[in-house]
Length: 343
Image (cartoon, rainbow, N blue to C red; front, side):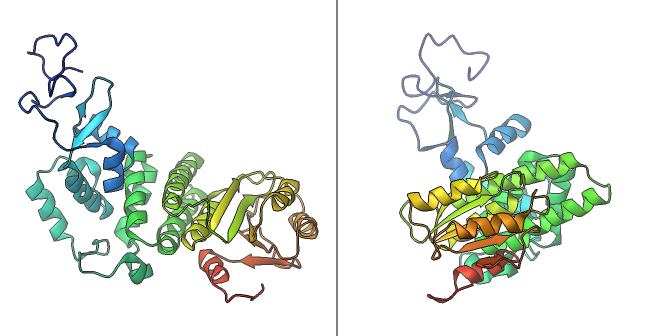
């Protein structure tokens, strides 16, 4: 990629420090490379997905990278704080198209004007999100912006809003204050005909990406206790299972995530392969077959000391030796139960 139409052909040399960097900027002066961030580092610093960064670059011209001959993007350090302010503005309900092009002063003024709103981020001296709990969850403007993004099928905006909320909130508050209310609203809009199945699938897929991403910061291959998370054969729903996996991981458990369509005999075999402290199953109301009978058979085939926990709209509550949890909070309460407690 050339850095300007009036430059001479490079003949294998670039525009900075012996030709190592190219881009739309004039980078021909310094002989040593400035401190630059890869797209992955910029994503981690701001909570904005790499795909969103590329989309914003293409649509709005920011953030503007330099390029290595290999095509890899590199960003100046000052892109990170501006991106974080943009994310804050979007989280308050402003459209990406309206805020990305603002100059720094106008962007700060916009954020300061809305600072008293329900989506204002914590100041440096504010208590952490874990201490604030549900009080820091997005209010109506934030959820409305997410619903609008779903309606418009605006993936980058929805991803940014969800990632900003997940970065700001502790996991349980994100699940109960953002993930579940959003999907409940989408489901109600679908049922009433205001949205279609494509919108529900779109929102579910984006939220699933964010839940997986949020869990990565807690994942460890050495933590104990250890839980297996799965759904039964023919059950295509996964969001509840991903939420449960995040709760387990954030609580210090090692999660062996099996995902959808896991045969019960494979769960029994897994219990013979590794030491398990729990098998947790997500069961939707569309799960096929006799779920209670399947759970009874699974219970008989597992060591008595391995508890089975089930949740979801299709989870039965009357299977001996199986604990049903109603939501993420009751799952957290089960995880935090006193040592030696059962049920």
